[in-house]
Length: 130
Image 1 (cartoon, rainbow, N blue to C red):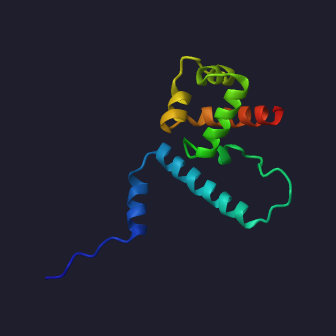
Image 2: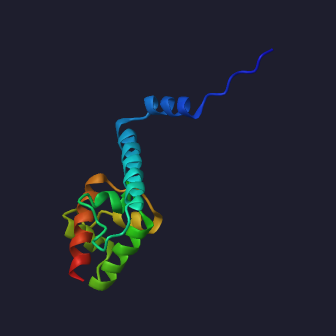
Image 3: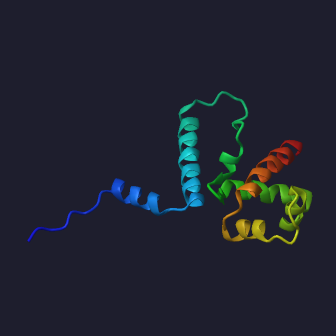
């Protein structure tokens, strides 16, 4: 009796890709592109300018999840401005009753991509003002 051949990681990835929904596929592509940009940025020697590229959303989140460094940055701006997560959501143009930012900061929960995009601009604006 012959043993059944184990599927390669590539075959597993392709199978998972075909069964994934559009949102999951986009999150995966965002993850891969963010990692590629991170490897490219690590390969470039520091030249003394601001390390923020034009697409700041790639630096604050990995897909739909905030990076730990981003959580620290958001919390420092919130402390400096004496804001709560609901106050930040209101400044971003979302309902102050929306608990998604609170969950993302406290429990590392996922955020909507629209919130991440606006949050990147908000964070850049308020970090530069400090």
